[in-house]
Amino acid sequence: MKTLKKLNITVLAEDSVLYESPYLGQHGVSFFVEAIGNEQKNILIDVGQNTQALCYNMDLMGINPKEIDAILLTHCHYDHTQGVSEIIKLIGKKDLPVIAHPEIFRLNFITDPFLRHVGIMKQDIKENIEESGGRLYLTKDPLEIMPGVMTTGEVKRQTDFEEVGISLKTITSEGEIKDDLMNDDISFIANVKDKGIVIITGCSHSGIINIVKQSLEYSKENKIYAIIGGFHLIEANHDKITKTINSLNEFDINMICAGHCTGFKAQVELYNIFKDRFFPLSTGIKLEI
Image (cartoon, rainbow, N blue to C red; front, side, top):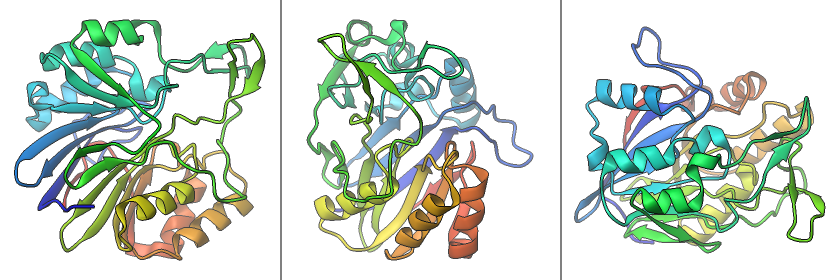
Protein backbone atom coordinates (compact mmCIF):
# COMPACT_ATOMS: atom_id res chain seq x y z
CA MET A 1 0.00 0.00 0.00
CA LYS A 2 1.38 3.42 -0.95
CA THR A 3 1.72 6.17 1.65
CA LEU A 4 0.32 9.62 2.34
CA LYS A 5 2.46 12.55 3.40
CA LYS A 6 -0.08 13.62 6.00
CA LEU A 7 -3.56 12.85 7.32
CA ASN A 8 -5.78 15.32 9.17
CA ILE A 9 -8.91 14.06 10.94
CA THR A 10 -11.67 16.23 12.40
CA VAL A 11 -14.53 14.69 14.39
CA LEU A 12 -17.64 16.47 13.10
CA ALA A 13 -20.22 14.45 15.03
CA GLU A 14 -20.15 12.16 18.05
CA ASP A 15 -22.33 11.45 21.09
CA SER A 16 -20.19 13.73 23.29
CA VAL A 17 -18.41 17.05 22.73
CA LEU A 18 -15.06 18.41 23.87
CA TYR A 19 -15.03 20.14 27.27
CA GLU A 20 -16.09 23.80 26.99
CA SER A 21 -16.61 23.48 23.24
CA PRO A 22 -19.51 25.18 21.38
CA TYR A 23 -20.25 22.15 19.20
CA LEU A 24 -23.45 20.14 19.02
CA GLY A 25 -23.39 16.44 19.87
CA GLN A 26 -25.63 13.75 18.40
CA HIS A 27 -25.95 9.98 18.57
CA GLY A 28 -23.80 8.99 15.60
CA VAL A 29 -20.42 9.79 14.12
CA SER A 30 -18.98 11.74 11.23
CA PHE A 31 -15.34 12.42 10.35
CA PHE A 32 -13.81 14.94 7.94
CA VAL A 33 -10.55 13.52 6.63
CA GLU A 34 -7.93 15.47 4.70
CA ALA A 35 -5.69 12.96 2.91
CA ILE A 36 -2.54 14.62 1.64
CA GLY A 37 -0.36 12.79 -0.87
CA ASN A 38 0.85 14.22 -4.17
CA GLU A 39 -2.46 16.09 -4.00
CA GLN A 40 -5.06 16.59 -1.29
CA LYS A 41 -8.47 14.92 -1.24
CA ASN A 42 -11.12 15.42 1.43
CA ILE A 43 -13.28 12.48 2.47
CA LEU A 44 -16.40 12.56 4.64
CA ILE A 45 -16.78 9.34 6.63
CA ASP A 46 -20.41 8.91 7.72
CA VAL A 47 -22.83 11.81 8.26
CA GLY A 48 -24.39 11.15 11.68
CA GLN A 49 -28.18 11.48 11.82
CA ASN A 50 -28.76 15.23 12.20
CA THR A 51 -27.75 17.28 9.17
CA GLN A 52 -28.43 20.62 10.86
CA ALA A 53 -26.12 19.79 13.76
CA LEU A 54 -23.48 18.45 11.39
CA CYS A 55 -23.55 21.60 9.25
CA TYR A 56 -23.55 23.82 12.35
CA ASN A 57 -20.36 22.16 13.55
CA MET A 58 -18.74 22.30 10.11
CA ASP A 59 -19.46 26.04 9.93
CA LEU A 60 -17.89 26.65 13.36
CA MET A 61 -14.87 24.56 12.33
CA GLY A 62 -14.43 26.47 9.08
CA ILE A 63 -15.10 23.43 6.89
CA ASN A 64 -16.92 24.09 3.62
CA PRO A 65 -19.03 21.13 2.40
CA LYS A 66 -18.06 22.02 -1.17
CA GLU A 67 -14.50 20.94 -0.31
CA ILE A 68 -15.61 17.31 0.12
CA ASP A 69 -14.41 15.01 -2.68
CA ALA A 70 -16.01 11.69 -1.61
CA ILE A 71 -18.24 10.12 1.04
CA LEU A 72 -17.66 6.75 2.72
CA LEU A 73 -20.62 5.14 4.49
CA THR A 74 -19.35 2.54 6.96
CA HIS A 75 -22.69 0.72 7.29
CA CYS A 76 -26.43 1.16 6.91
CA HIS A 77 -27.51 2.46 10.33
CA TYR A 78 -29.43 5.74 10.47
CA ASP A 79 -27.02 7.33 12.97
CA HIS A 80 -24.30 7.12 10.30
CA THR A 81 -26.28 7.72 7.11
CA GLN A 82 -29.34 9.90 7.80
CA GLY A 83 -29.28 13.02 5.66
CA VAL A 84 -26.61 11.84 3.24
CA SER A 85 -28.72 12.93 0.23
CA GLU A 86 -29.03 16.42 1.70
CA ILE A 87 -25.30 16.58 2.38
CA ILE A 88 -24.57 15.59 -1.23
CA LYS A 89 -26.79 18.45 -2.40
CA LEU A 90 -24.86 20.87 -0.17
CA ILE A 91 -21.57 19.60 -1.59
CA GLY A 92 -22.98 20.45 -5.02
CA LYS A 93 -20.83 18.21 -7.21
CA LYS A 94 -21.90 15.87 -9.98
CA ASP A 95 -20.87 12.22 -9.72
CA LEU A 96 -19.57 12.63 -6.17
CA PRO A 97 -18.19 9.21 -5.16
CA VAL A 98 -20.31 7.60 -2.43
CA ILE A 99 -18.63 4.40 -1.28
CA ALA A 100 -20.45 1.60 0.54
CA HIS A 101 -21.16 -2.12 0.65
CA PRO A 102 -23.72 -3.41 -1.91
CA GLU A 103 -26.08 -4.62 0.86
CA ILE A 104 -26.35 -1.21 2.53
CA PHE A 105 -29.90 -0.49 1.31
CA ARG A 106 -31.51 -3.63 2.72
CA LEU A 107 -34.18 -3.71 5.44
CA ASN A 108 -32.42 -3.78 8.82
CA PHE A 109 -34.57 -3.83 11.95
CA ILE A 110 -34.86 -4.46 15.69
CA THR A 111 -37.83 -5.83 17.64
CA ASP A 112 -36.88 -4.70 21.16
CA PRO A 113 -38.56 -2.67 22.57
CA PHE A 114 -40.69 -2.64 19.38
CA LEU A 115 -40.44 -3.30 15.65
CA ARG A 116 -38.33 -0.55 14.05
CA HIS A 117 -36.21 -0.15 10.93
CA VAL A 118 -32.77 1.22 11.84
CA GLY A 119 -31.08 1.17 8.43
CA ILE A 120 -31.09 3.62 5.52
CA MET A 121 -34.14 5.88 5.77
CA LYS A 122 -36.54 6.72 2.94
CA GLN A 123 -35.01 10.08 2.08
CA ASP A 124 -31.61 8.45 1.52
CA ILE A 125 -32.51 5.52 -0.73
CA LYS A 126 -30.28 4.75 -3.69
CA GLU A 127 -32.32 6.78 -6.17
CA ASN A 128 -32.27 9.91 -3.98
CA ILE A 129 -28.51 9.68 -3.49
CA GLU A 130 -28.02 9.49 -7.25
CA GLU A 131 -30.50 12.29 -7.96
CA SER A 132 -28.67 14.49 -5.45
CA GLY A 133 -25.41 14.10 -7.39
CA GLY A 134 -23.86 11.00 -5.84
CA ARG A 135 -22.22 8.23 -7.84
CA LEU A 136 -22.49 5.00 -5.86
CA TYR A 137 -19.49 2.68 -5.64
CA LEU A 138 -21.02 -0.41 -4.05
CA THR A 139 -18.50 -3.19 -3.55
CA LYS A 140 -17.64 -6.03 -1.16
CA ASP A 141 -13.99 -5.71 -2.15
CA PRO A 142 -11.39 -3.35 -0.69
CA LEU A 143 -11.47 -0.15 -2.74
CA GLU A 144 -8.52 2.18 -3.25
CA ILE A 145 -9.84 5.73 -2.97
CA MET A 146 -6.46 7.29 -3.74
CA PRO A 147 -2.83 6.17 -3.29
CA GLY A 148 -2.43 5.55 0.44
CA VAL A 149 -6.17 5.38 1.19
CA MET A 150 -8.49 2.39 0.88
CA THR A 151 -11.47 0.65 2.46
CA THR A 152 -11.38 -2.73 4.17
CA GLY A 153 -14.22 -4.05 2.03
CA GLU A 154 -16.39 -6.73 3.63
CA VAL A 155 -14.57 -7.88 6.76
CA LYS A 156 -13.76 -11.55 7.27
CA ARG A 157 -14.90 -12.89 10.64
CA GLN A 158 -11.77 -14.51 12.11
CA THR A 159 -12.28 -14.33 15.89
CA ASP A 160 -14.51 -16.59 17.97
CA PHE A 161 -15.61 -13.94 20.51
CA GLU A 162 -16.75 -11.04 18.32
CA GLU A 163 -20.27 -10.59 17.01
CA VAL A 164 -22.57 -7.82 15.79
CA GLY A 165 -23.17 -6.41 19.27
CA ILE A 166 -26.92 -5.86 18.89
CA SER A 167 -29.85 -8.11 17.93
CA LEU A 168 -30.62 -7.15 14.34
CA LYS A 169 -32.83 -8.80 11.74
CA THR A 170 -33.41 -8.61 8.01
CA ILE A 171 -35.85 -10.19 5.55
CA THR A 172 -34.53 -12.11 2.56
CA SER A 173 -35.87 -11.85 -1.00
CA GLU A 174 -37.77 -15.09 -0.24
CA GLY A 175 -39.53 -13.38 2.68
CA GLU A 176 -37.59 -15.20 5.42
CA ILE A 177 -36.57 -13.40 8.62
CA LYS A 178 -32.86 -13.87 9.32
CA ASP A 179 -30.35 -12.58 11.86
CA ASP A 180 -28.54 -9.67 10.22
CA LEU A 181 -24.79 -10.23 10.52
CA MET A 182 -23.96 -6.71 9.27
CA ASN A 183 -21.86 -7.82 6.35
CA ASP A 184 -22.00 -4.22 5.10
CA ASP A 185 -19.76 -3.01 7.98
CA ILE A 186 -16.63 -1.56 6.34
CA SER A 187 -13.85 0.71 7.60
CA PHE A 188 -11.33 3.28 6.33
CA ILE A 189 -7.57 2.65 6.12
CA ALA A 190 -4.87 5.24 5.45
CA ASN A 191 -1.11 4.62 5.39
CA VAL A 192 0.90 7.64 6.54
CA LYS A 193 4.59 7.77 5.71
CA ASP A 194 6.87 6.98 8.67
CA LYS A 195 3.82 6.60 10.96
CA GLY A 196 1.87 3.47 10.03
CA ILE A 197 -1.74 2.83 9.20
CA VAL A 198 -4.72 4.74 10.56
CA ILE A 199 -8.02 2.85 10.86
CA ILE A 200 -11.32 4.73 11.15
CA THR A 201 -14.38 2.67 12.03
CA GLY A 202 -18.08 3.44 12.24
CA CYS A 203 -19.37 0.89 14.77
CA SER A 204 -17.13 -2.17 14.24
CA HIS A 205 -20.12 -4.50 13.92
CA SER A 206 -17.76 -6.92 12.17
CA GLY A 207 -15.50 -6.87 15.25
CA ILE A 208 -12.64 -4.43 15.86
CA ILE A 209 -10.08 -7.26 15.99
CA ASN A 210 -11.34 -8.63 12.68
CA ILE A 211 -11.09 -5.11 11.24
CA VAL A 212 -7.54 -4.65 12.50
CA LYS A 213 -6.41 -8.02 11.16
CA GLN A 214 -7.87 -7.32 7.73
CA SER A 215 -6.43 -3.79 7.65
CA LEU A 216 -2.94 -5.09 8.37
CA GLU A 217 -3.33 -7.86 5.78
CA TYR A 218 -4.51 -5.58 2.98
CA SER A 219 -2.17 -2.68 3.75
CA LYS A 220 0.81 -5.05 4.10
CA GLU A 221 1.95 -2.98 7.09
CA ASN A 222 2.59 -4.05 10.68
CA LYS A 223 2.52 -0.71 12.51
CA ILE A 224 -0.81 0.86 13.52
CA TYR A 225 -0.54 4.54 14.31
CA ALA A 226 -4.17 5.05 15.32
CA ILE A 227 -7.56 3.36 15.60
CA ILE A 228 -10.43 5.84 15.74
CA GLY A 229 -14.19 5.29 15.98
CA GLY A 230 -16.82 3.10 17.59
CA PHE A 231 -16.12 -0.45 18.83
CA HIS A 232 -19.72 -1.43 19.74
CA LEU A 233 -18.93 -2.92 23.12
CA ILE A 234 -21.63 -0.92 24.91
CA GLU A 235 -23.73 -4.03 25.64
CA ALA A 236 -20.83 -6.50 25.75
CA ASN A 237 -20.15 -8.59 28.85
CA HIS A 238 -16.89 -8.31 30.79
CA ASP A 239 -15.43 -11.42 29.12
CA LYS A 240 -15.88 -10.03 25.61
CA ILE A 241 -14.51 -6.62 26.60
CA THR A 242 -11.46 -8.23 28.20
CA LYS A 243 -10.78 -10.51 25.23
CA THR A 244 -11.15 -7.60 22.79
CA ILE A 245 -8.83 -5.25 24.66
CA ASN A 246 -6.23 -7.94 25.37
CA SER A 247 -6.25 -8.80 21.67
CA LEU A 248 -5.80 -5.13 20.75
CA ASN A 249 -2.83 -4.99 23.10
CA GLU A 250 -1.10 -7.67 21.04
CA PHE A 251 -0.78 -5.23 18.14
CA ASP A 252 1.71 -2.37 17.80
CA ILE A 253 -0.69 0.57 18.32
CA ASN A 254 0.38 4.14 19.03
CA MET A 255 -3.07 5.62 19.73
CA ILE A 256 -6.70 4.56 20.28
CA CYS A 257 -9.55 7.06 20.23
CA ALA A 258 -12.83 5.23 20.79
CA GLY A 259 -16.35 6.39 21.59
CA HIS A 260 -19.93 6.44 20.26
CA CYS A 261 -21.05 2.80 20.72
CA THR A 262 -17.90 1.68 22.56
CA GLY A 263 -19.46 2.08 25.99
CA PHE A 264 -18.12 3.44 29.30
CA LYS A 265 -16.96 0.07 30.69
CA ALA A 266 -14.91 -0.66 27.58
CA GLN A 267 -13.46 2.86 27.61
CA VAL A 268 -12.37 2.37 31.22
CA GLU A 269 -10.65 -0.91 30.35
CA LEU A 270 -9.03 0.67 27.29
CA TYR A 271 -7.57 3.36 29.53
CA ASN A 272 -6.43 0.78 32.10
CA ILE A 273 -4.46 -1.10 29.43
CA PHE A 274 -3.33 1.66 27.06
CA LYS A 275 -3.04 4.55 29.57
CA ASP A 276 -2.25 7.82 27.77
CA ARG A 277 -2.33 6.07 24.40
CA PHE A 278 -6.14 6.01 24.79
CA PHE A 279 -8.57 8.93 24.89
CA PRO A 280 -12.34 9.09 24.38
CA LEU A 281 -13.80 10.15 21.05
CA SER A 282 -15.54 13.56 21.13
CA THR A 283 -16.99 16.05 18.68
CA GLY A 284 -14.36 18.66 17.92
CA ILE A 285 -11.25 16.51 18.21
CA LYS A 286 -8.65 17.33 15.54
CA LEU A 287 -5.75 15.02 14.79
CA GLU A 288 -2.80 15.80 12.55
CA ILE A 289 -0.85 12.68 11.60
